[in-house]
Length: 492
Image (cartoon, rainbow, N blue to C red; front, side):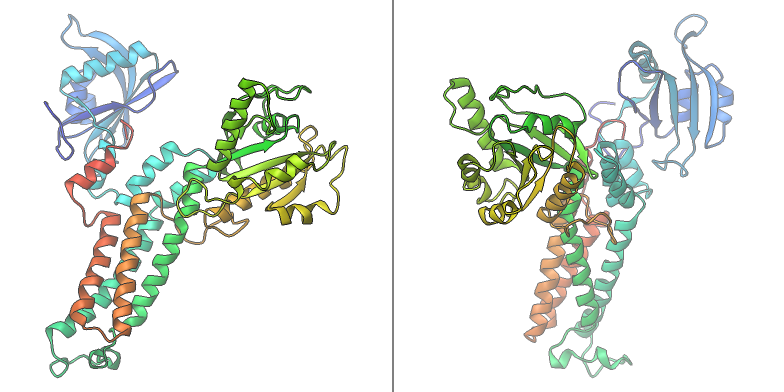
C-alpha cells in the first residue's frame, strides 16, 4: 500500500461529500474485491456479497475487531458490479449519517478492512482506463464539480454527453482518410495504382488527394478553436470592475447586482476606501464583481491607497462599468477617466482587446440621460452608454444584457450569443492540441498549394491525427494522464 499510483487495481475509497455537519454523507469505494471488503465490516455480509449490481442493501457498518462486532453507523450500501459501473470496476457507495465523527469512523473502519485512500481524480482515471469515458468527458466531470452557474453546468453537460468527443472523432476520421490516400501514393507509383476514383490520381499534378476533406476538417477545427474563449468565460468567469467618482452610486449598484447589502452606502463621499468583491451570475456568466474606491485626487493617505488600488484593478478588468452621477452631470473627472490608460492598453488576458467600458448614467430616475451624451461618450471611448438607477432598478435588465454582450464579444463570441450550435472546448489542454492540429493541417495544405512532395505532407497529416487522438485519450502517456487527473478533487 506504500506509494500508491494511478493504474493499479487496489481497492480505493474516498469521501464523496464534504466533511462537515449534514444529514447524510457518501463514501465511494471501487476496485478488485471492493464489495467483499465492505461486506467484511457489514452486519449482513452474505446479503451484501450476493447483491446484484445497481441494488441497495440496508445494514450497519461494524467493527469486527471489537467484541460482538460493535456498531459504527446505520447505512445504505449501493452495490455496483463491473463493467456496468462508473469506473468499470465493482464498487460500493456507502450512505451514512453526515456527522464529522461518524464519517471519520466509517472511513477508518474501511481502511482497516483493506481499502486505501484514493488519489485525486482516481475514480475518473479508472473510468477512463476501463473505457467508460474518453478524456474530454473525463475533464467535463471536473467542470461539473466546479460549475459556477447554470450555463456553466449546461456547457459541461454537453461535453459529458459526448458531443465534443463525437466532433473530434468526426474530424479525425476525415484526416485519416486524407492521410490514407496520401500514403497509398507513397507506397505505389501512379502506374501501379488501381483505384477507380479519378480524383485519387492527382499526385502527378502536385495536389493533395481528398483535399476537400482536409479543408472541411480544417474549417471545423477552426470553429472549435474559436469556441475556447467563450467556454473559458462561462467556466472561469470574468472580472467586472465598477468605477467612477466618489458618491456616484458604485456601492448601490454593487449591492443591487448582488441582491444583498454587501457594501456600505452613505451620502458621504469616500465611504468605500478599498475595493470589495463578490461572485455573481449575470445572464449565466460567472462574474467577479468589484466595487472600487471613488476615482479622484484624494488627500487622505489611506484614501490615496484605495484610489491607487482601484486604478490597478481597471488594468486587470475584463469589463469596466463607469458610473456617472446624473445629478452632477458629465464632469471633467469623468472625461479624464476615458483618457486613462486602462481603456487603451491590452487587458490581463493574452490576445484580448483593450478593456471595454460601459458608461452608466446613474440616478436616471431623477435626472434622465441627456440625448447628446451617448455620442459624446462613444467619441471618448465608451463601448455603450445606458441610463440606470441603482436605487430603483431602472435600466438594470438592459445593463445585464449589455454586460453579457460585451463580455461575449471580448472573449470571442458574437454579441448577445446565448446558445451554441456545436460543442466547445473545455480546457486549455484541448485548445493547445486543436491549435497543433490546425498548424499541421494548414501547413500540409500550404505545401500542397506549392506542389510540395507528399512525403513531406504525410507526416504533417499524421501529426494532426495524433493531436486529435491526444484530446480524446487514444494517444496518451502515463505522465500526461497523471498530470491531468491529479488536478481533480479527491472522490472524483
